[in-house]
Image 1 (tube, rainbow, N blue to C red):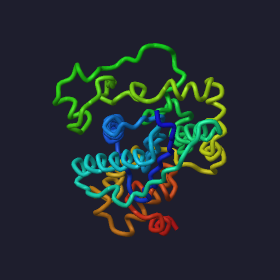
Image 2: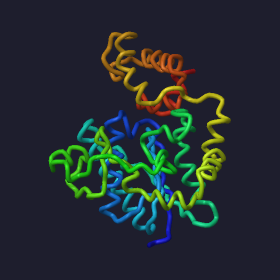
Image 3: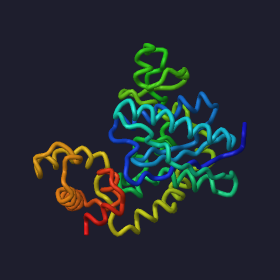
Length: 286
């Protein structure tokens, strides 16, 4: 097996979201194993965040690039079909960095990836975050439960995966139709790498993302998706208008300040929610 490992990170979108709701996250989750199987890439760990994604891959550098490009393409096509918005990720740059077994860089990278959700103040620990692999390791020895592809019709598989590609027989779907990461990622390899749950917790608690969450003076208190769903109601109740696009500059200023006040949002989060640049939001909040 190839001994190369890579930390793959997409650039944070400043004024847009990759994932607007649970269905978007589920689509992203299901693209991961389908594309990994097709490209013969082993997934070690990953996390999907509102405006970026991280993967740790076990493959060649060329395969890592092909995987992330294919993932971006598949998700962009899904996004266009659902929202009518083309080219979501055309200018979304990707950073690919090598990792090594033996110098703890791989352990640190896995911890860094999983602690993204904690640093973003979404949850208290990575085990609670659904959209990734944070809860996959050092669990009880109970057998995984889920539905295998052979129990589903071809039509249902296409609907769940948003793809006509082959669905590997070993994958398992949970009750919501999301492919369970533990059915395909390198669980045993990661557990052997960390040796014990205690050692894994050490890396999680000492990661840069953990320090960020502890040292931040003020972090957003609500998920991007929660606020996005509340925005239409705010537009209606405050301005008797149906959408952000219908607001005047003065009303947009008021809305931005209301979001900051009601949801303890920072300018970065408001930028993502409203689809505005950081500079524009900063001026609206002045």
